[in-house]
Length: 459
Image 1 (cartoon, rainbow, N blue to C red):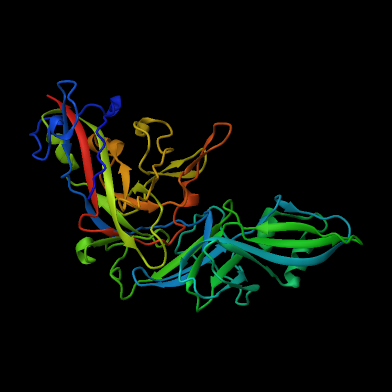
Image 2 (spheres, rainbow, N blue to C red):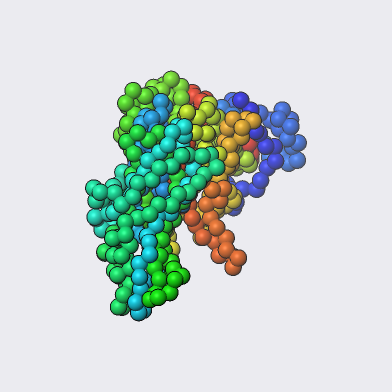
């Protein structure tokens, strides 16, 4: 396996720069002349690629799918990850925040508009979807996960038939006139606000047909389009109601892994590669992922003198994908605690969870916005791997600034998990692009990952 070794060095930030210890030299180290690094100072420059990286497949606890950029609906029988079923639920937003009409208004029609740009599974058959009205109030303060559901009426409001195409698509279907007249009636008199609307129309559920073989990824803007006209006018006016990442909207994703290598996987039972034929697995929306731990990194402390990491790369090797879809094109990594929950810092000013992803900038562990630089890397089809810069992460481990409880792979659906506005304001938006895909990655084991480290020490 190619290691992607970089021979340039970087200065270590002052806070993490020095670590005193009394230890012996690692046997796996090489002098600069042996690896092409010209010695310019008396400081030793060493290299090792024998630090242990252990891998296992785990089930993440609490997979938040709420307020995402994509809603998953459908089902697919996957020989690797089992039978996967996805349903979506969401509250509708009244465009403009309220709805009020003046004078006489006449109902014309109510339509549903839905569009997709993501597919997973067998796309050779026509798929059925059913839209139902929720009968349960949604909690706007709650973060819904892939295990949550909501009560809905037994009779569907609409049935859709979609023929999956790789280019994506959309469909419009007429909704019951009685519902359209009900929504229009709310606009009369003093009208209706968003809060009052949610009490009357609690939201929608989108369910797959029993014979479906595909999971769709719908844009989180499922529209109800209400058309009406005023008095004797012949031109219709349109009022939209739609799901949005600003209100509760999530995907419930379940899987039956009976008969697969992952049948024994649970929250309390990770699967080492020895139990899965030397493989490890990643599937974001079901919460299946690979956990990597670095038990021998602390051995670097045994160097006699003071030590600094100049460059550290982690190469994660990919064997292939599940039959349902391609390998995840983008990947990040996040710290987990001992309970296999992704760690986060709550930002009180924005009410957001800042997930503890690997960072792109040296020294960001010491800044105010320390988690605003998530590292997202693309899959290399030539090397068949993902390569991560773990320099800062290892530095933090060596001085006990971060807990050495491991990293997990997290597929992302966008190359950046922050957004910078024209004003220069940076917005953290990781949740919108996490846990919203079923692309199944199969990793090589037992050498799932390899850690390559350049470091220096002074006596």
